Image (spheres, rainbow, N blue to C red):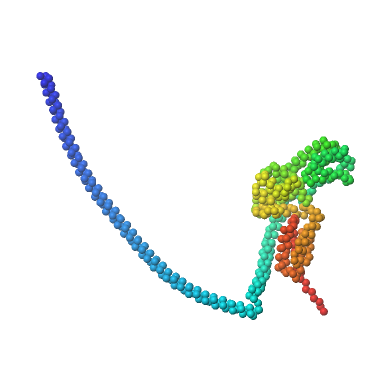
Length: 505
């Protein structure tokens, strides 16, 4: 019974709990259904609100679109109206152009008729003129052209003379100022030097000691120094002969040391020659460094410094080449400063312009080509190479510094006392001047004066008029420049004299 009661109680509790659960489930389903219906009602309301808003937005956009379309339609209408107006204007202009073109054609036809009439009239006039003058048209044309040519030549000569006179007045004044200032400020030595090859002896007895037993001393001396030692009847003197000035200077110093020492034999000659070589090399280096310091040329290659020192014993027409180079550097630098050019470049090129002369005894070529090769070999700039290469006119100057180096070289070489020339060269230069002047037609006599610095030419007045004299002096100057080499400048003067002679009876 207890078991039955227990089972009955369990079944009753289960039934009660199930009933409660079903009641709760039923209320939950009712609440869920109520909420779903409420949500559906809210959604429907929001959908209707959204639809209303969308319709309002569509209406608003449609209104804006209609307004924009009306505005664009209005602009298009205005543009079409403007285009139509322009088309009408172009049509009117085109009609005017057609009318003008027709008028021009008509006038062109009239002009063609007039031209034909003028040509016929001119032909008749020319025929009448030829008949009256008895001269053909080509002959008259040649006579007219000849007159015009002569008149034009006279006018051109006068204009050219006026221009040259004006340029000469202003140019010469400025050039004289610059050159005079440069020369005034240049403190180079004006005394020309030459390498001495005569060595004085204390007595004539020294000649025998210099020759030595069976000539061994003189043979050793000549073999070591590379010179010819001339011992003749000249009292208390011997002559050293050699083409290389440095070799001659070394031989001279060696002989002086031997004479001072008194011991002359082959071994002593070798010893003294070695000392003389070292002293000469040191002297050349010091002179070169002093020259570079004087003109302010820095950072020069050591080999160029050594070669530049060789110019200490090189002369040109009696003028020491190293001193000449220093003077050219000073003059070029001073003129460059006055003209606003590159002063260091002008000085450097002026100092190195004759460096080729240091090696022209041992290397083939002109001193200009040798110098250009040296400067390029030791990394000098092309501006320096160009400026030094033009000083004898072998190359055309393309820079102001090159022109200044050429002018300074001529100024240093042509000043009084700078150079000497032999009597034969002097006479040959005078004869060449007179020969060039006499070769021109109309020249009666020429005279070279002022040591060849000026030539005066007398012409025949019946063959050479005033304008022809002016052209003649130009032609003679060009011929002298092309065929002669001379320092400085040569003044050419053409003299034309007219004499009227009659007799009183």
